[in-house]
Amino acid sequence: MQRITFEHVTKYFGSVKAVNDAHFVIQEGEFFTLLGPSGCGKTTLLRTIAGFYRQEEGDIYFGDRLINDVPTHERNIGMVFQNYAIFPHMTVFENVAYGLKARKVDKKEIERRVMEALDMVELTHLRDRVPSDMSGGQQQRIALARAIVIRPGLLLMDEPLSNLDAKLRIKMRTDIRKLQKELNITTIYVTHDQEEALAVSDRIAVLSEGRVQQIARPHEIYAYPQNQFVANFIGASNFIECRVGAVDPQTGKARMELHGIHFPLKLYRSYEGPGLLSVRPEKIRVETEKTKETLIPAEVQTVTYLGDKVSYSVKLGGKQMIEVQQHAVEPEKLISEKQKIYLDLQPDKAVLFDQEGKEVLYNAAAHHSARSGQPA
Image (cartoon, rainbow, N blue to C red; front, side, top):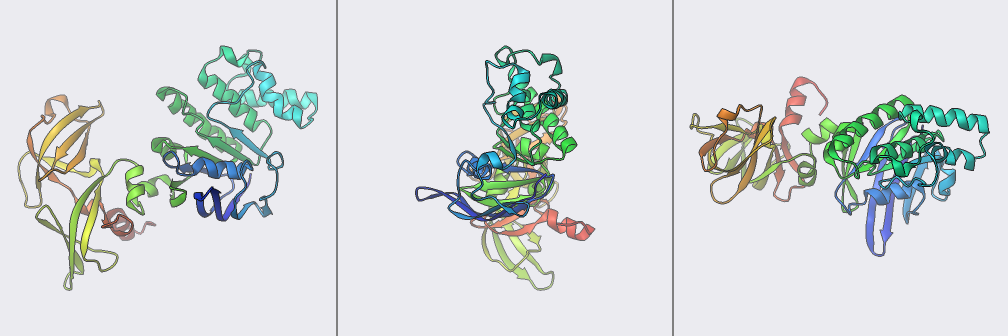
């Protein structure tokens, strides 16, 4: 079990900063996920931790030990790759035992530890099979057993579930999370799948263009996105252009104008000018009649029925399209395409960014937490 510290770590490929000033700490026993789109730097950072790459700037510590120049085989890490990287000509037992043999562990101890690892991943009955006869999920379990059998201080996982089908991915991520907690191994997990990251992580680091955009617990990163990129990448969000007016000295609130309707919001700081209101699709209420002045007229363009929820593509005044979701809708209550509706955007349950989407001016969840005494 290791604490991992990054002190201003930067990795270049040519003139490009693949990792740009990574500066944070991963705690002992934590399941920490590096999340972001292809090319964002998450795998580069993982490979730098493993020692496959050497950063040009900054330091990496395992506990109090500086490991910048420590070779990979001396870092006491276990790795699970996207492509399994197991030996097809060896049996399941031989694959899992490989790392122990390389460390010259006693034969009886190898037998005990391999069977213990296979029991953890539920593969003891297949110890004498070869991987080529096995499913993708079983092969990934072999790779996981091989990584944990050496009792690493740190477990690194690079897109380990991306080659599996959807149902198996859900089962495997649950199993990995359970096993990680049982073993209490510090784990760094790379994925581009935001749902996967939300499901397994203690904390998530969202990366874009080599730079860490935000680090937080799953529910915090969803509720309190620090910029437009995070709000858009973690879950779905609509970004609606608006205008922010001056603060009313009597109420202390600014007047936000959106599609001709005004909403009072208490901002973090004085701001006037264009803004972006980030509204989650599930936060928008749909009405078939205009029951209050703050409802915005709209027209349904497409209806996507997904069983537990319905997704509507809706056109606001002009040409802007947004997504609206309703959950547990009875089929007979579905709204039709081309139907005129009214939307309650509920800005007091949304996030307001500046024009560039880089600064949070108002966050409803944070205001609610402050009122309820919960940490924001």
